[in-house]
Length: 332
Image (cartoon, rainbow, N blue to C red):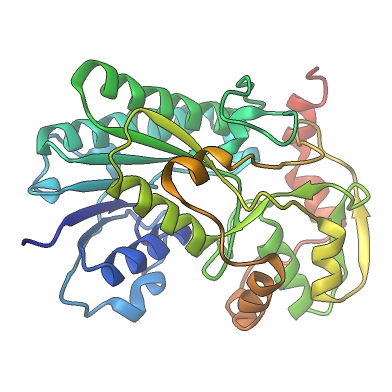
């Protein structure tokens, strides 16, 4: 039997590169598409010579369906996109262009290739300031353009399912963390911020009082959920993927060890994220395997990767988040 071919957009990124590892381990032939805006070649360096890996340094915004990259593909895993809250407030057109229209181009390539399953990397940010634990049928209320763009990309995927019969599954990822998590870019990624501060011997900049909790889910657990969704007979469904076990920022600081300074709480951010994962557990049999303490320990083993990440302090954070407070501060 021929081995399946999988296309991974954003495959040099944080989650995408772990998806590539997962697929290769499962015996797939893998084709990566990445424009290296958010991804890094070093994320694939350990498998650069793998005989079942093809890498295409292309931009999804420039895909012209049908694309030969998708020829013969069984599965498409769509991670390519742009993230972060503040840049999305400042550059909403770019976010809509890539996260919505770019997704449409990938959908059309997948449709032309008649793939068996299209798995979309959605964001739990679509829920906004949600009740917890949050189920998939919770009302959607995006608080900023990034969240809106990811949700509209999801809507486009399901429209392709409805109109064209493309088998689509969407996975709303909660707070992803793990090795290869982003080290540079706009302020906001808590692990990148804290690890760089720890390396520099500087205090951790904790937002608010640190009692806010996040449903941190380890990246290899996420990749496994995507593979299980692709290999299932399920289509037209949304699944939450989180650990279902929220952890406070204060506890993360305790695990890392170091001094703390506090910065103002930010509007539009929930006090708690907490995924109800009963649907994916019941329908696909997925459960998270990596506990929070183990996940943080695995990342600490590679802390030197953050040596060149931006070093943030109270003043630089205040400057970087001005537009955040300006536009979201009065939202009710």
